[in-house]
Length: 261
Image (cartoon, rainbow, N blue to C red; front, side, top):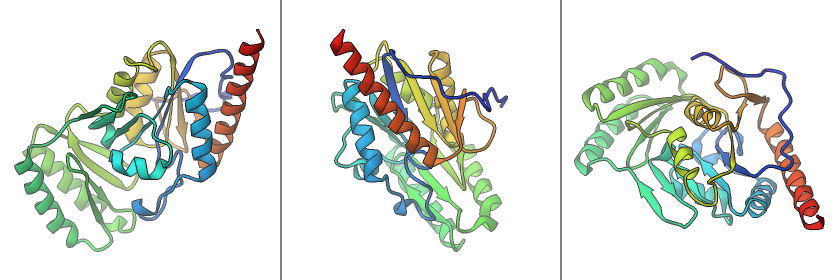
């Protein structure tokens, strides 16, 4: 993958435009924690997201590898449009849920097999999402290669599945499902249609989202280190929080200016 990242360019001003905002969660809106279940979004960040949603007439969505039901818990009481499991689940602005599922027998077979394997590697964790599986090894890096080999063997056995590498995790998900496709689907629907997309994320799982946003002449922002297709970079979660405050202030100013004019 060739990086097009603009290493030192400041983020562009968001004044006067009609924007649609898409946010990854882990590592972007929420700091990475030792275990996925320990992750949380600070109340101040949820308040900023609510302001952005209000000021953009609802054109704000979460796009994550987590299932939608977990996103609902993390973002409560906010209930924006959401794409979970990298887009295998997607709740649009009208509340309609779109799902890509695995055949029940495939899901059951894989869950049993992966559970047995993971149980033999202390410190690793299997996260079953129904239509996808995440194999975590943050607390047991010595098992990285066996886990990657296991995941690769699964997709070789089931051609309808694909791998999605991430930070200390590899996911097994339906082929053709990714964050770029999810953002593209949102951008064809109200209230996102016709707006300039902005997507901010931190992981390999977000690269397809960056590519989709770049193709729509939007703004893509990578959080943290590493080569990326994103156009801009923020150093970490704390910079994301500061940028959210700037966004809400700018949107408020634009609204005030529009009312006065």
